[in-house]
Image (cartoon, rainbow over all chains, first blue to last red; front, side):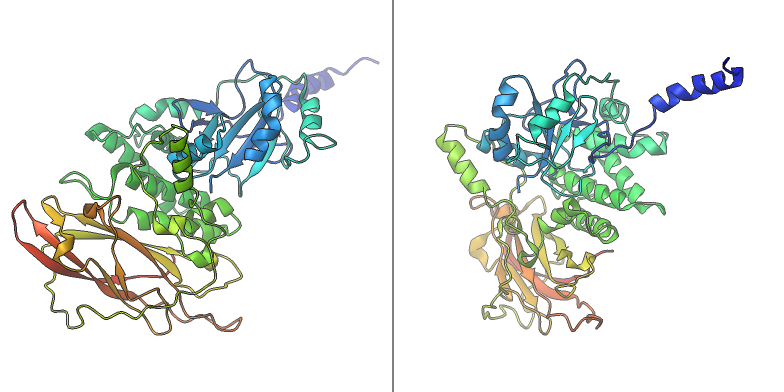
Length: 67
Length: 425
């Protein structure tokens, strides 16, 4: 069965959109961390929470306070 | 955290895991001391504004490179097994994400060295202001001070807007306290002093907490300076031991610009202060008043955070009161010249350790930076449903022996005070 041209247009438009659907930011499971860059403690420089480009290691992110 | 450090050491050494920390504290150098003491070498970021928006700590997340949170409740005793760290890491294997340049904040951190102008987009204004304060080099030249103050003002103005959120109030509080700690209570002649910044911070945090009582990072920020009755644990009682042990290891820690207050090292507890009987040193107000304001009094009242929750366990007004004496340029305190302390007129039914409280020097014998903090306990609240009595104002006076100039006249002077103890909402 030939694909209707209109259906093809809808598929082409919506397919990539759904693949790039916006994910909620946050710290709960299934969310994406906010794209934060923060200064480091005890040394110069900053840290990007989502990881550094080219580094494929899993990240364990520990939020804490010294109190 | 030391438990996590031990549990992940081998994985990190084998290059299988990257561990990063985010510390939710107002003072970065305190976290730095703790990490050094504990021997934790992770990269740790400082997030005083709670931009990560966690509600409590510790919180440990397994994160896929690129930022996807795969697990948000990891436990150090469950490294293996279903739901443990190793199993979650297995799910992450091979997952790669293309990282774009940081969209939300990177450009703002880069902009932190530039001025904050009203022409900035409203949505970018607060991140740019926070970035300016986070990346502050602690310089006291005019340009640095102007930029810093513009950043603080931007966040305070944001919290005054009709659509301000609880988060805006919290951040305005963080900014005010950062400014006070960076510049100190007084500023150069002709500039606005930082008097009231500490109270401004506490008021902002109190407003934030009253809008979101379940936010424990915000609650702890008030409790850090609040009364013992409200402390879940001592906040910084570990500091003397850490300094001693680091010194023994030959790692002399740097001196702090912002020293700990009594409240920050106090233990929590429900024992009410037993008042010591003291005699009013100046009942007839015969000691001359400091009409020339040789000394300015910087007050802050940190309320019991019970005011922000539905279950009020203590009556409003229970608080920790902080006082710093800031001397005029040519004035010095001469401790031999008479009593240095404050007298409080305790309202009926209220308790404090004593009506007369000595002011202490900050550091060894440095009376030029005297301060104190003390606890006030309101009478027990009535039965449920009964409106609490109105919070009275706290009155009293401060006595200080001061000398003016190198060989000038020395006097014992008095300043009356009248404090509002009501928590800000």
